[in-house]
Structure formats: C-alpha cells, structure tokens
Length: 284
Image (cartoon, rainbow, N blue to C red; front, side, top):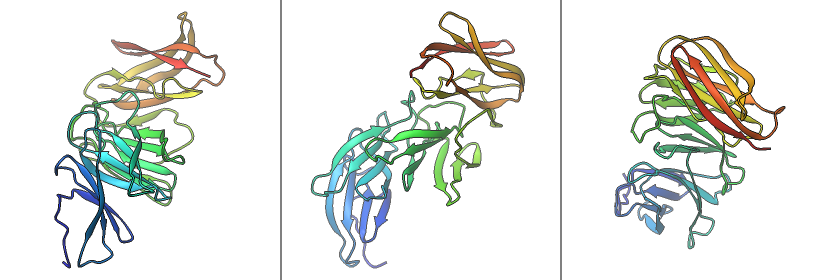
C-alpha cells in the first residue's frame, strides 16, 4: 500500500485516469467525493456533495463524454433512486434528473454500469433494467428482465450485479434465483422464466401509456392452461395474446398495437380459477 484516503468510509468507487469518484454510503449525510490521485503519496479531495434526496450512494458510473455521473442509492429512506449529476464543472456539480422503473417505487437500485449510450442496472427485486442514455440527462428505459418475479419490495434480494459483454449480451447475478445471460432484442414475444412463483399474479403493463408496443408480465404458481385477452373500453374482445398450457413461473408477452386506435384498453388473464384484469392506455 502506498497511501490511503481515510477522510470518509468509501463503499465503492469509479476511477477515471487519476481521478477517483468515491461513494460515501454510510458516512455523514451520504456524500460523493472526488479525489485527486495523481500523487499517490498524497491523495487530495477535489470536491464533495450530498447525493440528495435520501443520500446513500452505493456505486457510480461515468457517461462516455465524462460529463455526467450516474449514482445509485442502496440504503436509507425510500425511494432509492438512480441520480444523474452534471459534473463537467466540478466547482458547480448539479443534479439533472433522477430515475426509477415506472410504477415501481419500492425496489432498491444497486449497481449501474455504462457502455457507450447504454446503462445497465441491477435493481434488486425489479431485476435488470436497461436504459438508453444517448441524452444523459434524460435516461429512457428500453428493456428489462425480472430475475426476481416474486415481488418488487424493498428487499436486499434479487439482481445484485450486471455486466455487458462486447457481443451485447448481459450477464446478471440474482442472489435468489441464479445467474442469467440475457440478450436485448427488438421484439419481446412470449417469454418464460422457470423461477418458482409464490402466487398467481398479473402485473401492470410497461410502458403505460404506450405507443405502439407494451409488455404484460404475469406469474403462475402451478402449470395451468392460460388465456390472456385484450378488450376495448366497450368490452369488445380485441385480440388474444396467450391461449395455451403454460408452466409455473414468470411469463411475459408483448402486444403490438400498431393497427389499433388510441384509447383505453383492458387485459384479462384466465388461469384455472385465477382471473384478473388491468387497464392500459394506447396513446398515439
């Protein structure tokens, strides 16, 4: 060891050349500290700031232009947010936005990795989340895979770490359900995950509102003949998305509504004695 910087507890850090971005998760009020490491015998603090709101920075990643820092919160009050900081001027660091999965306010964000214009996130109980960050100040979710379909609660369970290979495939480690290798495609279709579900469940579609495609997720606790239908606001059947016997586990199906008009629609699942209905909005 040459020298050490022990001003604050450092949970994780990201290094760019001779600059260290240190995440002080449990120290003080939750700072992010930038450290000058050009002289390894004398590490110096350049600047620091509170990772508000509800500061508890766990890890971070830099955008390709090195002007924005994406930071994740792991502990503290809800919501646990992904925070985007403009760091092009270290004398005036500003927060430009925060992000969390749509309709999920309880899951804990854990690790973020950035590859060009893509951010890949391990979001504990809500699984793997993939963002388009071509505009770093406005991240847009483009794909997800729920490695932990049991719930989206604020548990330290689920997807812990992610890594994207040069091929584009993503490796994800789930603390409960195992190791996954995923590929982001242009369409979703019907997907099946053999993870054991703890109940029958129909999830809210995502995105919602949508144009023109959306994904519907559901879980089966037992093997069942399953039907999933879409209805318009008058109760007329629009289409059948699933009509087959399926294994227990987590499933998802995409609805491409390119040929349908804007409006309110309902989707209903039938799986043995289990039925449920949810509303979605097609907005063109």
